[in-house]
Image 1 (tube, one colour):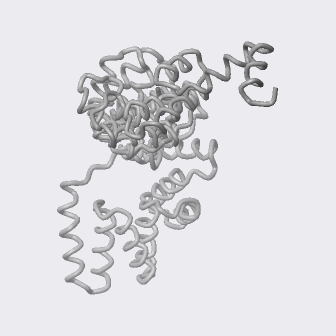
Image 2 (cartoon, rainbow, N blue to C red):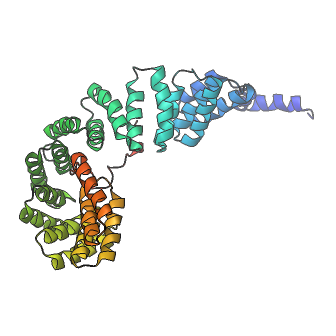
Length: 387
């Protein structure tokens, strides 16, 4: 038998399975085939089927959406994003696609892009807790903590047993300086896990932001008792004592922090500040210089070094150092005050008056608390843990 039809008949007779497979492959795959393959867990085959459908009909938005779902299940998020975007371009109102796009972008840590898609998903379905939660987490990931807290608060209330969600809400409130919200959330977390040193620390920060420093000290003392080697616990406790002008207690805590971490720049800087405030400039200098080497962005280091330079009549160094302190945070009055005194010593009365007037203005606005002192940024969001 030399013609191809005869050979095909022979193969069918010899191997019915081969013939059935050949027929299935020859038949054009449909959305029903792709869905069936997905339900059977045959994801690569399902993706291939969806691609075949889109190749036959490049304007089938639902097929691109289906392809995106299968690719997401395979954790092929970049390809899934491309498929979802194509689906939305063809049909912007296709249900669920904006949410799936936002989730795929969120999974890749693309938080600004995810927020755009998730806002659209929430606008389409305002009752979607998943869209609201993911949008709040995306804002947290972009450090827009005020927006994060707005979206996470109702989501957390709808899921009171989700400890991780309540922790992110508490941290968002803390960094947005919504201290009452943070206090409420950390109090709830501590009720469930009273032996969590980090929770005591964060609760203490919230209390300090509310001006309840003695209660904040008690929370840090609890954290230090539970975990004496927990990073930043002794520094935070020392800072609260320092703020309360309890310098002996503060010094002890800063030294304990240095026993845990000898390169803790802020503990070094505040020890130097205590020595300077106790009129021991020569003892202050080694601490301040070490702090500056470890972290050249600590404002208090430059304020104190500038004041010491001025006392020693090293006016050129004092001016450069104090101007650097002002540049690091123009809203804090102490550097402006020292700069005003320096201009007075130099006979520059106009600039002195300008700086001292600024001090009066800033004292009305100045608000310093522990938030932002312990670390320069809140914990990073691990997008792979979120669904």
